[in-house]
Each structure stands twice: as structure tokens, then as C-alpha cells.
Figure (cartoon, rainbow, N blue to C red):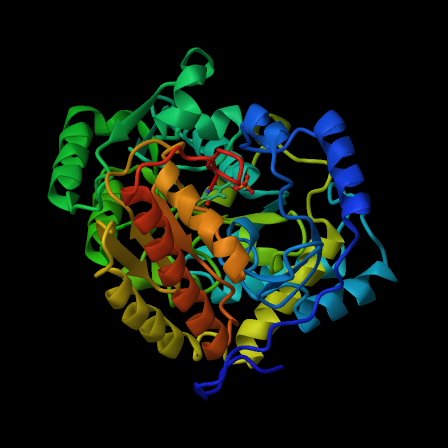
Length: 475
Ligand SMILES: *Cc1c(COP(=O)(O)O)cnc(C)c1O
């Protein structure tokens, strides 16, 4: 299992892919257009075509496609593929688990992968965390935390603590509960009548990437002074607000928020669904601000990008708040809680971090990405670049809406060059697998630079924009 290794100047080994006949894939696409509803996808644009990327396989950072050859997966398939596709440890663990059991219930029963994973997660999680609650995805990892925080206060002498506080631009998932604490108007505004009330504070970084940490902290101070004893919890994406357009802030801001939340007697919910598992350079972003969360929410990289799986890790103090008679039970659970396949995959991910030098291999990659970004910053049409860990963001002009075309124009230019990008509006996002080789990273960054140059040159000429990818913008 190799992850590190010095740069040797060679081009990456681009896997050969088996091209499929257009007749077969166009039939697939016809059925797709008749029967499938894709996430975060404008359906008229989708149906109008052209034929989207048809993925036939995946390995490491590469997607094998029917007609586009091998494409480098620049965003780890919506940020989940932290260790690359079909990581050998994850594949082996899944094969072994398949022969034992696929799924069994986790209420009134236990199984070895579920118990071992809880023990291993607590061992690597920030100090103070001691209990693991399993669910299926990032949104449910947050739902668990919201519900448990609310119930904890209700039955432990603080029933007035009912308000959740989050930040503008926040993205914590797509269920109604997590949308209630979401701060992206494009995704969330319509549902306002359905949502529970929450307080939203200015984000530490505005939508152009400008630092407004002091403003944000002052607003938090004001809120806590005014009504601190009604706050149930403050919810935060540590170091990077992902879906907002990879807006970044300092560990100092995060530490300051945590200190204020603790002093006010409220709970701290840290959403590491995206930042967890090495993305920011440390196993958890929380480490960089020495956070002691009351809830740590994990998904995405937790299963190495293999299965929908999530964990909410909390403290014994919270857990103990549910002792007593039956009315104090946490009546919450999904059918697939503690799924043994997900547990096995997550154990393999922890093995990879323990034995394969993944974190140790990050500084050289992070530096290389920074060197490339410094060059990209000089291109015409680039407003600014940002980076935290192995997440790069290139902002083209004003932030604009998710439908803003510039990022999509860059993605359209990158695809024939061998890179599959998925922007957030005008922000080109780079979040490749942490196991990317130095050659592959150079290829990704050189290609992105070429695609930006090409797309921006085309834009300065008069044109009518015809995106070759559907208009949308999830995480
Ligand atoms: C993706 C994401 C979620 C939601 O996870 P899903 O698995 O898509 O429900 C929540 N929080 C953050 C920070 C995310 O990036």
C-alpha cells in the first residue's frame, strides 16, 4: 500500500479504459432521462444534453468512463473518496464482512464490527468524546446531535435551552432538521415555513473569502449576552464551510467560538462530515483548535467513500443524561444503524490512517497544491484562491449564485483534458483523494490551470454560454 513517495517528475499513469459503444450508452441515457431523477440537477438542462459522463469503474483517483477515457476525480465524488476509489484495505474488509453478515439490527443486539469501531473511533477522536451513535449519512449524523442535544437539556434541568445557533453559509445536510440550521438561501429559503427557528450569525468569512471573524464573534457575544440561557447548541463546520464555496477561517476563531459556547453553558456540535479523516491536514479539523466538542459528526470519509455510513460521537456527560426510566430513552434510530459493512469499511479506513502514512504524506501534497494555486492566482479572471489542507478553492469573479456559469465553464473545459471537476457556482473546488500521487496532483493542477485559462479566454470573447454539465450545485 503506497501513499507517499517523492515527486519523480513523470506524468501520472493514466489507466486505460474500456470504451463502450455509443449505441449502448445512449440507450442507457435515454432510459435515465425517462426514469431517473438526479440530485441537485436542473432537469431541463439535464434532459437537453449532451450525454453526461457515463462512469463504468473507479480506482484510486481515476474514474473510468464510457467515452471520456480516464478522468481524474477532482472532488473525490462529492467529497467522500478520502482514500481513493476501491482502496485495497476497504475492499478486503468489505469482502470479508460480506461473508459474515450484510446487515442485522443494532437495537437489542450488538456485533463485533460495531463495538470495535466505537472503541477505535473514541481512541482517535478529540479528548472527552466517549460514546458512538451510528446512522447512515451526514445529515442523519447531524440529526442525531440536534435531537440528542435538545432532549438532553429538556430532561436535565434546562428545558428553556431550545435554540440552535449556526452560521450564515452553513451546510449541515438536506433533511428538514438540518435545513433548519442551514444558511444557504439557494437551497434552504423556500422551506422556511417548515423549519424550526434557529439563530444564524455572520460567518467568519464572507462570500468573497474576506475575513469577518471579529464581526462573527461580536455577534455571538451579543446573542449569548442577550439570550445565552436559551441556546441548546452552536453548530459549526470547523475550518471550512464546504458547500458555501469552501469558505475558510482560522483555528483561532474556532477556538474562540468554542470557549464562548462552553462559558454560556451551551453545547458544541462540530460537523466534521467533510473535514474529518485528514481533509484539513490533521485527522480531524477539531485538533487544530484543540476543540472538545460535545458532539462530533462524521460521515463521508468515514467509510472511505465506499458506503453510506455515519457516526455521531458524544461525551459520557451527554450519555449519562439519558439514564433513568423509559421516558428518558433516546427514541431515535434508523433501520440500518450500525450496518456491519459500514463498520468494516470504517475500521479499514482507520487501519489505513494508522499504518499507511497517509497523514505523514499530506504536507508535501498540501505544499504542492499551494505552489500550483499561487500560479493559478495570476490567471486573468481569477479573483482569489484559498486553501486549507488538501482542499483548494479558486474563486472566479464575484461569488454569485450556484447557477453562476464560470465554474461550469471551467469544468466543461477540463473534461476533455482528463479531469472531472464539480464547481460550486463560480468556485472551482479541488478536493482529491488524500492518496493522490504527486504526479497525479501535478496533472490535476496543471489541467485545472489550463481549463481556467481556456474558459476565461472564451468568456472574454462574446458568446452564449452552453454548459455541457447540468446546472446545479450540491456540496
Ligand atoms: C455533505 C455534508 C453533510 C451532509 O451529508 P450527507 O451524507 O450528504 O447527508 C453535512 N455536513 C457537511 C459539512 C457536509 O459537507
